[in-house]
Amino acid sequence: MDIVQSIMYFDPLPHRIESLPSYGGVKYINDSKSTTIASTIAAIECFNNIILILGGELKGEINIKELSNCINHKNIKNVVIYGNVSRLLKDKLDIHRSINLCYEFNKAIDRAIRLSSSGDSVLLSPGFSSFDQFKNYKERGETFIKIIKKYSDV
Image (tube, rainbow, N blue to C red):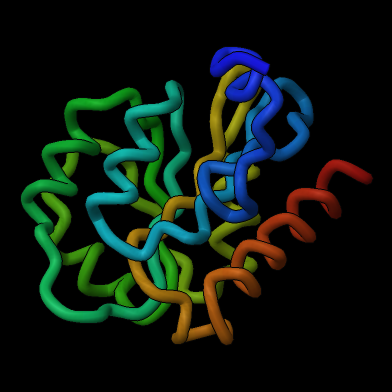
């Protein structure tokens, strides 16, 4: 098998820019593994018409300016923030987009879904650790998948 065929049939690892089934013309992307601003910025580069879900537990210093610049210069429609870092992000992000603050993860996902419309991409790429509300990024990603599936069944 050559390289092109290998890439075409490669199954991406879970929770790493993982495409979920689309519903109502909306793409859902699970990038729960994203626990740094750099990984969130890399994920943002992959999509358009983004409803971005950021948040979790702060671990060390973050480059708010770099994140703000990325959000301002990319095709992001709305930003939904959650978790222990939500108040810091709300106060420090210098962006020209709507910011929606939801402390609880479930409510943040609900808000992102409600903000989306056909042609949008709901991107969970939190940029922070999951330890404020979950055991690990896997549990956070599985919770995201369950919530999206619940909405698709309605």
